Length: 236
Image 1 (tube, rainbow, N blue to C red):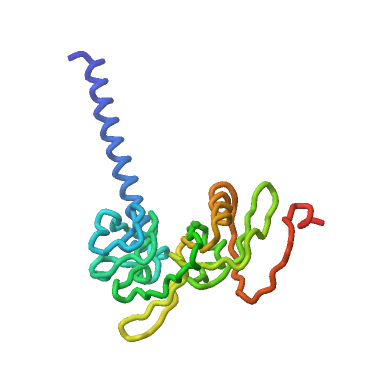
Image 2: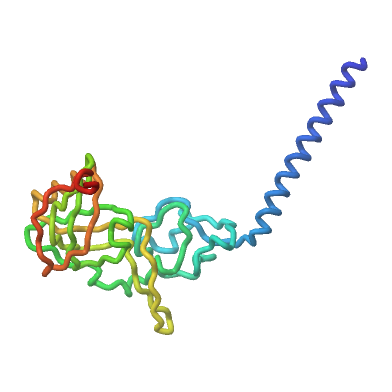
């Protein structure tokens, strides 16, 4: 075997050894870094989970992930056995850690979580970030102001709109000992509104093409006939 061929073979072997050493070093460095952050294993949503999904069917939607202890949500679940026999009470989104407050036993779901719409009214649902729905402090039976923003203007378009259902809002959970705790709202809420047909078209169009904000507007609040707000109005 010529010296050139031998030298080439040696170079290939040394390169392979160097690559293995680098990979091992990086892997060990990642493991050391994770160890320094005191990782904990919790259940994390990998695929969107529809509301009302039984805990027994969540196997395909969640994974057990190691996350730094500092980022573990209080009460985060490590096993689906902890919510055996329960169902999700809101939509769960990828990246969300499973917590008991997102579950309830079917028999414990209160029927007053939804109110009846007036006869002849349409019910239409909008999905909004929590920050646009009073921080999630909204419940069925409340009435809201419906604001629409678009093309640099904002308008209070509808007033005293009846809310018939809220999914993902702030909730109060009672444990086995009767102690109540307040669970924060989800990142987004599904809010169902009762409106007449012309207003239903308006709501659908706003949800599709504009930004929507809801304000808590009691039924006895005064109604203001105000026009749209533009940048000039804000900065004048």
